[in-house]
Image 1 (cartoon, protein in one colour):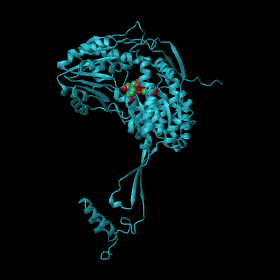
Image 2 (spheres, protein in one colour):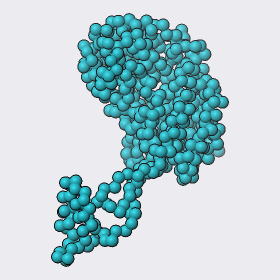
Image 3 (cartoon, rainbow, N blue to C red):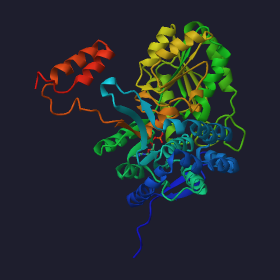
Image 4 (cartoon, rainbow, N blue to C red):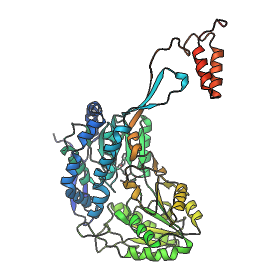
Length: 515
Ligand code: NAD
């Protein structure tokens, strides 16, 4: 008898279409077995304590040091992005992350004493965190290393074991992550990787996991949440974005234009935090567009083997979205300043870095996430209109404000409805692991990075302990005769009369005349 043939996903180079690998897809049974191994390892991993877990993960530094070139190469082969981007935005996340959490995790995950009201005089109160168990991490293809490894490490440090389902679009990186964790000698089951597509992800959501951390599209996020709701288990959704960049009349226009070019086109615009709407105040609009057009037209496009600024689109399906959005915009009156076409001479998945002007909110390119190398510029009357447009949108992940008056920039930033906002910079806040990251509205919910990351991957336990036994139990049975003194205690608390409250509490026992 022949075993049924395993399903595979095949990976083709985004640069030249060559077949890079065929990866066997994990079946629902394989997924369940991986989750069972993770479950089996969970107690011992949690019992190591945060210091023990940080010690166990510390060898990742040496591993990254020894393999960073190979990792950057693999990420670039799988995605097509420049090796500079692979090293800067993906590999460098690990040392930055470990430095930050090695310093803060012991404190955040420790026991914290908290206030106890006078009413509960003999008691002490504490709050502590404890691990959730097994975490499912489901990641996308655009930053396949970082968006897998950062939530995995956060969950691990918080005391959980992890099952990763990397994107089927970037299986080489999935294997590299598996090898990286295997090489540092973690106990079996602490990290599991199941390769496969949407079916594998769905099987992982249905398996015996305690939380799902999902990064990807809104459509898939809804399905993931529906499965989590059945159980119910917590779910965190890190979804799409439509970053608004607000350029005020007093902005440093050259720097703002350079920032828009990088923030909108890094990783060929396939970034949830990409600049996807540039809202420019009328009085500086034309100068800004000239500077932006010059910068973008000078960009070098090519595969990772040449020292290019921008690579191909990683996922061929993105190309269709980009072309549809540009065509719709042009049909409705937008003008192409540069780009606006495929670059067939480089390969099938290359699209020229593009600047569009006269973009309006009715256009698809304004309303939907494009996730491609296009910068739509919108002319606005003033900053008020810019803030209104920035916020009047289904997404709310990131944004930026550009002005020479930093105080005004901070005021405007506080009015932008998004999870992270930069003033006079773009995207950079995602790189600071001390800052919480996550979106609102259609961009999802939940936060990771920073202290919030550790909180997202642990439960809270509140503990109240009696330090001594009071001579009588003022709030327990029998109630007879205690009612009027309880009334006086409540009145004293309302009047913030602590001495009176203490006296009432001490008298809260059946009185002679009431018995
Ligand atoms: P996607 O939703 O197609 O896939 C994401 C992951 O979910 C993949 O691993 C996929 O195999 C898996 N999956 C598919 N169907 C599933 C199901 N039914 N159940 C469970 N898992 C399933 O998204 P994508 O195309 O890989 O990524 C692009 C999207 O991700 C964009 O919208 C982008 O904005 C968003 N994104 C968000 C962030 C963020 O941090 N907010 C970061 C990067 C990308």
